[in-house]
Length: 276
Image (cartoon, rainbow, N blue to C red):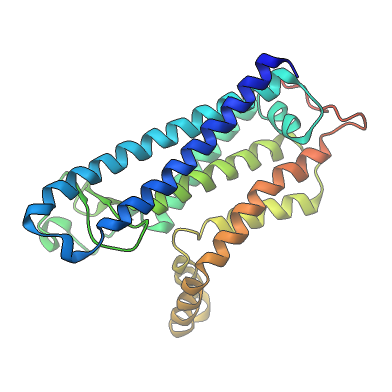
């Protein structure tokens, strides 16, 4: 690999790592401010400012990850080697694959928002009447909940539609939507992938859907198995949240490599023309 291209790829890796490490440290630090006893009148303003800083840093970390992925992806395409990461990069570099990725990323992100409770629609509740909210309005709730669940952003868009942005849900939504979009873009190009490969991708996407809100599965299934059974299943799924996370993200990461094998010529080169 050319030295300049190798630097680009390594720079991308470092930015991606830096972004995720920053997010982890950010969650860890902010969790120290979740003791209700600390929420004195004198401390409210300080914690509120820290909450604003939290989201500014989080957005910056997302930017570093996005730019790192771009640098890594572009470096792999230009190097044009014969490893699976390069096959994935070449397969998704063309304009058609990019459009597919963006469409799936946005579509799945909206769907994820609905089932995770990020995008809230409550036709039976009037936010202005029940919560005394000004329509439209928004604010950051700085305290108090478990690590990763604060600070929340609450937005009232209409009397029945709003947003409840929870940090851990937001991070998982971006990660899972990206991985689902990547899988979709590769799958469309790799029309000849095996049935098993497609099955893995589907399982990963469906499982990832319930990462931020595993109890949503119980809500949906209660329609078919009855309310009592649905509630019991919802509780069980809540307790298995870590299990869903453990399965969905690794599967969504592994699947592109499985599909890339189907797009690799015997000499290791890519079957797809990245310019088409």
